Image (cartoon, rainbow, N blue to C red; front, side, top):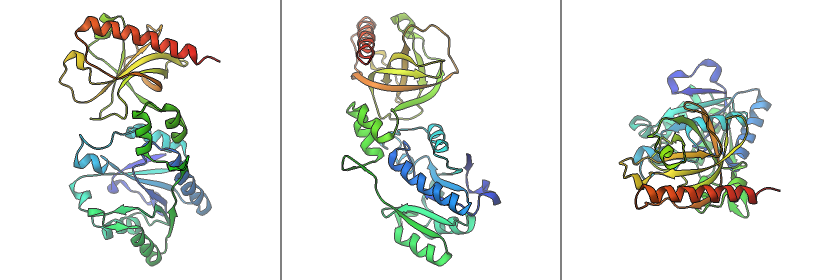
Length: 311
């Protein structure tokens, strides 16, 4: 799969594509159903399949602090999209210029720059400044410029719409089983292990630290986790949050993972942390000794969880 950063990087080989548009945060079952249709049409017409998305996501541009927490970072999303067989991702920088793009200008992008052969969109689709473009405008453009426009209908599970918002609600409630059902895979975070303060060593719980590079995470608290990417599936306990006991000034959450019975140095390694069960909320303790005791109890609880899961 090829990622195209900006309209100026479009090449002749990218034209004549089959397009869908959206954030596709999480690449959940609803997204996967859309991508299957896009891929099927691309195979029928012998044309490349393309997702058009924006970075940052529009709500993050307007208010990064209150925008919905992402289920997947951009790099994670790209991997998931590749697994679905999408050929191209056109990533447009969302800035003041993009925000002010008119709906007709966006149609021109589809028609002139991409020469689209088909567009897949929901009947609630909105595009252009002030969300002035809608599905009916796409239909009219398709008739005028001779490209197909397909209405994407909502996928439901348990009679409720599959959406990124619903998955965030499941994660906030600690319902990882339903989140997994809606995602089509267990919820996880993938990232590179970076250097931290190495305070965990003094608390008898050395941790692998992963920067989340966002102001909000869809989860916070302490979890029983599994870790991939270090030769086999490993078990551990993780904290997602801002470490209130340490009185740090950081506003971005950090993922810290203590892997059981593991002593290797793994700085720079990319790991996938799979969240299995929530053990407790993150809280501020009365000093490092109280924090140390809590971490010890968390480790016991996580080990007990995995023992209970054995067949």
